[in-house]
Length: 384
Image (cartoon, rainbow, N blue to C red; front, side):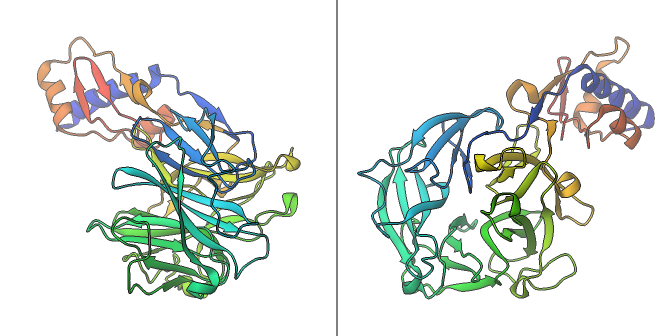
């Protein structure tokens, strides 16, 4: 595309961006204590969030925009709640959709019961439950890993399924059966990281697996030191390294998110979620410094990537207010076409994605803007 056509196309998109006011949100997005959140976009189009049971029997919240959440009830009741570790609480659920059903991995433990705790699994036909407990996958003493909590499930492109887990006693992985409801016969655990973190989550981006975990103390109110760390690998089972190439097995990670004057102990991030404009978002918990007795509330922040391909959160601290995720109509920006721009120019714009100059981006307030489609007077999904 020649320079004049690029200028015309950029003008069209700038007009579209400037004409659309970006909705903002404020943190926390859920002003309730919901530690260790996990989230899934369900078959009905809604997002569902589950958390450690400060609300007994595992609370469920629902949203269509990651910002506004409604309490939906609990995953279990007193009769259906998991029976393993009878006096324990259900911690750190991990929700997934596997083989046509919703599958929740969970930890069950008493505080300090690091050899008696374990990980189980439950299933449901609907994201709002009711969930039926399938039972334990393993107990710490059976698997030989102290403090076996904080499960995370991931599936490889070939269909092989893995569970990751661990809390300050090493991060481990093991292959699961085809239905994801048990350990694969003969599978052996593999250690992939040292003793710095818990709350494992893995996200694949641009050929790398990024291992996210939380370091420090989670639960000491304003004295909490929780923070989110990351390392990466070209293979799911490692080796994982930090930005300087040092091993996660030796507790080397890169800092992603830490406390601010407003939020203390941010951590245990959920899945990274993509909005309809291609932006990535991370939910996590933290203590509101103005209301530390309110427990670990739910916060939301955008993930971007630096020039070396590593994830970033702005200023490495929780935001107070920020531009909201874009879903549905909010991700489609109306453009007013300049009358003398002919069909040839419009077709050229449509066929050749145009990335705006840094000056134009600064004026628009967006990190990058790309034309994906320009027909019938609309520039669609231009915000990325």
